[in-house]
Image (cartoon, rainbow, N blue to C red):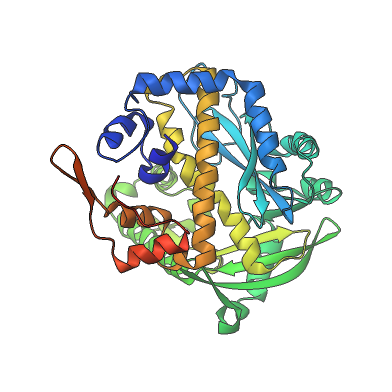
Length: 421
């Protein structure tokens, strides 16, 4: 099941037909029913799961520090105890479960996970996580948080006994000030660096919030800026054209209703004017320019001085975790796997955590060997899938030719070349 998840990124009920097309030494009976039974059995063994997690973390206690991150799962499922309404990162109107992961650095491996009811506010989860870290005998924790944590009160509270990385919302006046201050610095080639396949510009500074000083890390992705600006200005021009149609200007209430349904926060970039009995919209030039300046940028705060590239790498790990678990989020809804019971869900979390360990190790080797400059994990898998096992008659099998590129990849991972079974 773990091999399938990493290789295919598809729902688990498709594991059986995948195995029928793959050379594999595992048992062939992996129907949806069999997988559901496996997950249910895993989910019932809570004490054994915790023993494994403590032993696994104990093998990686030499990390420089550990990173804690939270993601969320929304679901229509009715019978999951931890499924509750709360702050939803995906902005979906669904109940959810919060899922916390501890990573080691520089091993880049997940060491521990836990889950919280969706109604518990993120900041309250940190106190229990500190207890878990002490139980696991892991120190030097660095908490990687999202915007749901941000407030002056929370910053002050966290600053007392933990290190963290958190985004600075654009609603905070310091964000706009930083962007304006470093507008020219973000255009300098000396501030550019490469992260995976992207060119990013970064500037580090110190700012004060609530009487406390923090390190600020401002980033610009020019490609994303161009895309965001084009989408934004296209929408502005389309709205202005649509509003000129007579039927939309019969009353101010009708125009306000149309704008509210079409553009969230329209009143921040437009004002309604009246001329010769017709209602029109007029751009708020200063507000639009401020919006355009923010596009493609991101600001991260920390109470620890780190390299700017490392900060962005640590924060972007959130995307890796969330994308990896997207498969599980979708699979929870599939009745064929019967993941509407608490035990089966707990088993699925544990199975996916094991898969995340292997996925993270693959990603770590790719970064170390420079493979990530040319491949994503999924592209790497497709490169290896080109190698076929051909059966000649009842007993004879041969392996297709291994290309030079594939040989180099096997060497990068210190894996011997495949031979016929």
